[in-house]
Image (cartoon, rainbow, N blue to C red):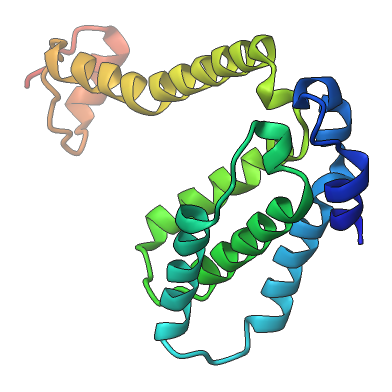
Amino acid sequence: MLTTWFAFSAINAEHSLANQWTTYINLLNNLSLYVAGLAIYYNTRSVNTSVALPMHMYICRYGIFIFYPASGDASTIVTGSTRLVFCIAGVLTVYGFYRNSIHLPPFISNQLTRLGLATLALRKSGYAMNPVFTLILVSLISIVVALATYRILEEPMIRLGKKLTSKQEPTCIASAPSDRTTLQRRQGTLKRKC
């Protein structure tokens, strides 16, 4: 319902998208896509599908993006039936990736999951399109990555380098103290032998 309202009423194809930006970045504008993603997750995780089905989803999605006759500026593409077709292509894409039979190594899949969760807030808000916000965000991320790199990689290497290059006093082999060494220790005349 909301998708059709935004596609046919709230956003006008005759006006530029820049003039309708506050309407376009409204969270309700893409709510149907978020709900479709949740529905795919909760309704298809226990369903056994053939290996070929996600591939058919890819083919359909690419077919829609390549052969669908969409023309015009950005406001034309995000309104009317074109928007509905591209929303369906997006849902097919999500389903194809979710039911994919290719399993990545855990290191890669965990990092991609973290990246997706971290950028979800940016995708929901329209601030990512603001160049000043993007510059600030990239600067902050660069600083965090630089600090993490220094802490995780450089500090241990510096410690290791200091340990390997510093002169260490030879360690003495401890022996059981005798009465003579105890007496010498008390008098301060004991000489260390290494």
